[in-house]
Length: 164
Image (cartoon, rainbow, N blue to C red):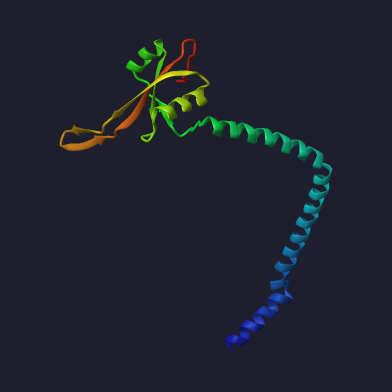
């Protein structure tokens, strides 16, 4: 009985216009609509092929700039942040700037990174490895993580402006 009742209910739905195929028909209509839009876009893009060629030329110049950057060895991941303290700001007057750098960084990498990012000439790089230290606050203990910092001395006449 229940099985037959289900069939009767489905027949009533279909008679009332609730067909399973109605949604499919609508989706076919939607597909046809999008196909028309795609055809229009293809026609418009055929007229704009000349503009596309110009964009390819511009993209080629960007690629050459990227290649130059890779040849220079500039790696933006080397410098983490400028290390701004009272002591480092005094060094800025002497053309020495302090940066936190990646743990695996060495002097030539830091020099290339500073020259590449800020467009200055570097005369000297000194690196200090600060060790992690234990800190106590009452009974609880913690650790201040260590980091590597680089003191970079620039050639006379060059300057770096930090937007603080």
